[in-house]
Picture 1: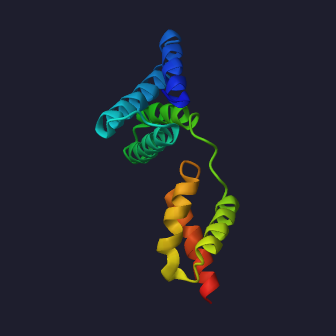
Picture 2 (picture 1 turned 135 degrees about the vertical axis):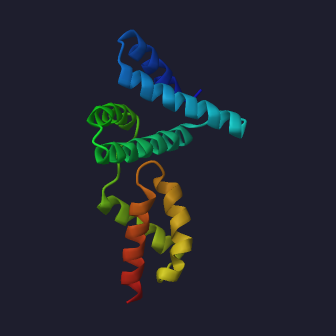
Picture 3 (picture 1 turned 120 degrees about the horizontal axis):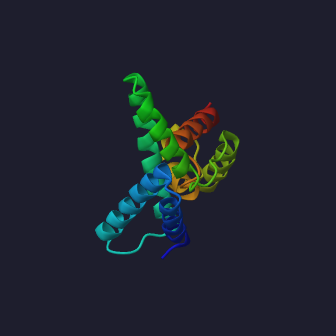
Length: 152
């Protein structure tokens, strides 16, 4: 059992004891998603895979918050925000745009990318290296900017 899964299990016990509904609900949701993924893959997940699941759940909560705000359901917005805060406590701190750009420059140099046509060589390497610490959208934007700047 990975250390992150152990931490989730312990935190779930604490949330139940403390009657903290937001923590309990968020952790149960992640635990359920992890177990489903393990059954699907036929093996235990490592911490990186668990982090990916937590990120996916956090993204879903952010989308729900937007929709509930549009529907003027402030009670549900508060609930989702509380659960999102719990999920974010398990994620590593996100990288800044400058840190992503630095990693992208290194990857571009490593694969010898010369322009936008080489984005397909750079992205898989960066996504693997920055998994869990930067969103794919940000990585893609930074790579686009750097590669288009190099080609001119």
